[in-house]
Image (cartoon, rainbow, N blue to C red; front, side, top):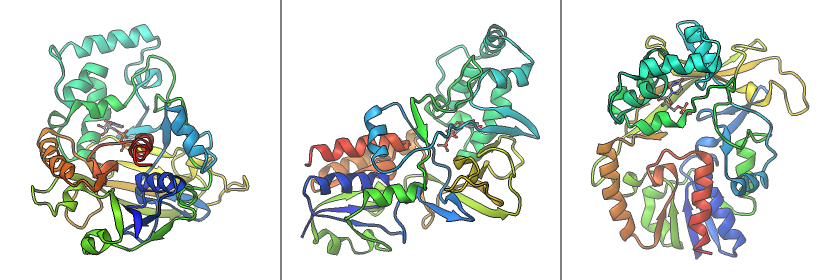
Length: 369
Ligand code: UDP
């Protein structure tokens, strides 16, 4: 009999498993997929750690979380600075002085502020959707070229139908600082995320290709408590309806050239390019292998966003009002499952970043130890 059955070997599950094991509990981790790591899984191709389920860049302001992850991996000095490609025009992201200079020819921060001031005047009330929020942050020109269609491709919805918090993830700076994140600590684990999770799970029993929901009663009988990190609506057999998720599909190519786009992340912000971004994985590690040698080939992934359908991998919860209300009802059911803890992006239906997942997992298990 295990003390804890942990469903899902992603970041939340792995942190919970590590902490509970270190506190002396008997833990079993199971995962539906045939690998650990959930969506942060990386796999080596041509000497390059490929982020199989999309780019993951670790960043946090929380020193305790940073120290925690550094127990399991060394982090490199990668800083995310994506480039936006709008019909062949390239813009620096996030929105900073390089972006404003390219957009309007402005040179000083004062000129940039004045330009945005002029354009944000059209929003006269508190923004209550992503479009209004974006225009009031950076004005209509940037909204039209760099936000509107990228967001529509990513979420499959107009900006007027999306919550404003999504765009608040992006900094706006009147300096020449193109670090995408406002974070004290940032980097990519040397050797890839899979090896980080492997270290977290070391000495812990893991069963892969094992679907909890296929045989729930049987797995439940193996443990006193369950930590469930899958989709909350799937746990309840969708009895209150389907929560909406966005899914992502990747087209991966190995190219016989050392440098395809000169950056790890290029966003395609026009409406006609069908992919939202192209990731060139080698630049997360400066184009070098583990011995510091230049890699002759490159691997790119074109990322296509789509609506989630049963059978697809869910990536992003769609936290609009309809889904949030449905989630609250599922949350009510979850609160009645006294022996089960729901955690992570899917278990809590929340657009968590990796550091928030770790902080939540640590907080959750602390009370159990
Ligand atoms: N966004 C945008 N243009 C960009 C990049 C981001 O409009 O070139 C907006 C868009 O609404 C997106 C949100 O910012 O949904 C968050 O983007 P981010 O790239 O941070 O999302 P993630 O990396 O989590 O997929």
